[in-house]
Image (tube, rainbow, N blue to C red; front, side, top):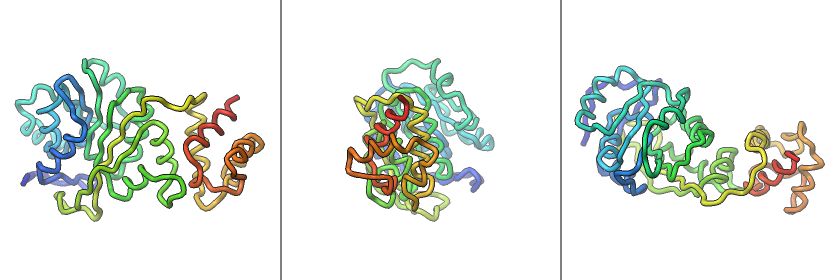
Length: 266
């Protein structure tokens, strides 16, 4: 059982894992080797970072809390393959940070701060880096949303974005009792494996905007949410799949959103 002699900061969503068995199970999912590189956000107590460093060739980890410097340097002393950047991951130049490393496959493995989970995911998607696999521990409700299917209550814009790029799998449940301090919610480990082939997309920016706008007001239908788009084009795609403008976004698959975006991009 890990013990931490630090002052936990609520504003950074700091909840550290206590048991190495949980950490080992997370890392086992990815099958990383000494030729691979791993990016981590929020090393906190470094229990996950240590396990990553044992198995990967390089570990690049981002920590926003400068007060953890002394603790992290102490816990990671002896791991020459770990580089810690004490900065905000969300404003970092990820492509530049990774460019100086040499590796076979790139992974993102992290117990991410729950309050910025979705922004982290979107930064990864837009990074232009090819991650072989992403493995995250997230709030259970967020994990349900990430892996949600069309027609479910949890299905949202982030579900569509992720399902376009990745095959998503809920790996295992993690009780709130596994953390210190104990959070108010349980967690789940979710993995994302990059799809070998993607549906051709003419304009990724337009696709993202269309999906976001479609889910802007979840109780409203597409006629209301997409009134600033060419509805004649949208309805021509919807009719093909047996829908009309009264449908809500949560009923539509990623394939339909892609087709609508591609037609609008012409």
